[in-house]
Length: 210
Image 1 (cartoon, rainbow, N blue to C red):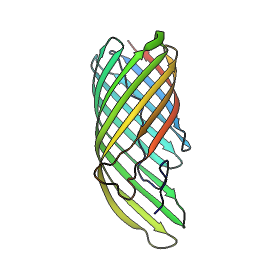
Image 2 (spheres, rainbow, N blue to C red; image 1 turned 30 degrees about the vertical axis):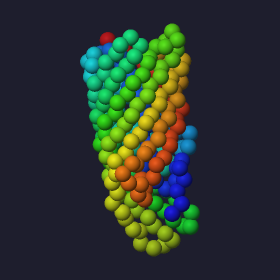
Image 3 (cartoon, rainbow, N blue to C red; image 1 turned 120 degrees about the horizontal axis):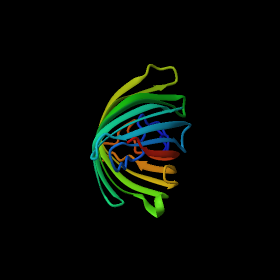
Image 4 (cartoon, rainbow, N blue to C red; image 1 turned 90 degrees about the vertical axis):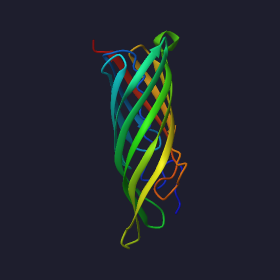
């Protein structure tokens, strides 16, 4: 089977979600972005319920499929620095049309922890920068059909690691964003769970509801 690193025939694609980087109760961050390798977009909303507890929801829809993610966790600040850890779940479906009259499709679910470290309001509120490391467990079902033959399905599971980067530049409340990440499967690299990279561009709006 021939699969590309960028889009290939994977059923799973990295969930490069905007890092929360909340600072205080009432903070609300809205982000809209698009992956440069596929046609589609992602929307993310993050809210600080208290001064140390935040929630996040995200969804993506593209020509390759759809995925959604929800997470909740703890954050704290020290000056411009932010430390946070979130736990969450995600799920989705995707499909590919490959070479040699081959079609692949499938679904997946993940369960993860994510630790982030970043800086906000740098350069007089013009720059935010954050690094995240997500790790957890992924499971799903991978289907392969060649020509007009009956499709074969393969249950899949693996541990995964996803380092991510979020960079924002702009004004105090409105910034342009760059996101990047990659999936590593250190235990198994099976059909449909190949490693992939993702790079996204978007816009981010941040304000406080209090």
